[in-house]
Structure formats: structure tokens, C-alpha cells
Length: 209
Image (tube, rainbow, N blue to C red; front, side):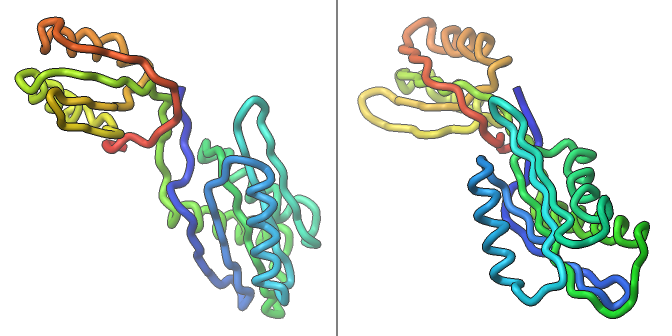
């Protein structure tokens, strides 16, 4: 009911024995989105020696792909994918571009360089945890609103919307494991004078993470 991914797109550059390594990373939700990003990076760095990539996408079935793009087999794309898997990340694509600097790195040197570049790019993008949450819509009078709002804020739950009218209407995303306890708290806080409607489930990044 939860997984780790990156929060944003990022670019990081490093140098290893005069070769430039440029890591571009992006959160993605489909293979099509990953391939589009890869093609955009290839077009941007069209004159590079190599544009190595790897991506790992979750869903109904896991999709994981990598390419050495001309580097010796197993020295580039696979190490980038292994960084993603070692960090237990999903739904992202990493492209590491190399401009050859004239000094051969050898197989082990390439593995280290591509792995380090990928890890630096991921670190720059920031790692977040996504949790499966249920949207809960609450209609409550103002006398109970303060208690419920404090509960939401203290737990770090994500408020999607608040409407102030004759009563207060709150839409809040609650982790699945907390739903029953939260509904019980709301009923107690409002002395049963509350309307609760259960919405759809979705993965969200909670504020406290």
C-alpha cells in the first residue's frame, strides 16, 4: 500500500577521468512517458558518445528496461537499473549521458561511474513515499470542525478541499490503514452529527513524508 519514488525531475553532472556524465531523472507513470523522456534527452544531447537509460514502472505488471547504448554489455544500463532497484524506487526513468574524455575507464570504472551518476541524479530529485489513501468527504458543523481539523493536521493527512458554508465540508485523504480509526474519531468528535462519504482510493505523498 506504499512505495518510494522521486519527487521531481532533476539533472546532475559529474566528471570521471575527463569523461562528462550527465544524469537526467524524471518520475513517470507509464512506459510511453519514459520513452518520450528518453527520446527528448537523446535529441538534446545528440552529439554525446552514449545516452544510457533505465526505467522501472509499477502497475498491474512491473516494467523494467535498460540500454547500454553502445557501452560494453553490463557496464552501463544494468548498473543504472540496479541503483533504482537497490534504492527500492518505482515509477521513474534515469538517462545517463556520457561525453567521452579520451581516457578509457575499463569495465569496473564504467560500472562505478554510471552507478554514481544515477545515484546523484536520484538524490537531487528527492525521494518520497507514496501511500494508498482513501478520499473521505465530511460535512460537519463548526462546533466540531476545530477538533477534526487538529486531528488531520497532527497526523499529517492531506486536505484536498475545504468549503465553508452553513456547515463545513472537508475532503481529506486518509491512509487505508487509518480509515476506520479516523471515521470513529470524527463520529465521536461530532457526537454523531456528521455526514461521511467515502470516495476513491489514490496514491498520494503525505505532508509529513
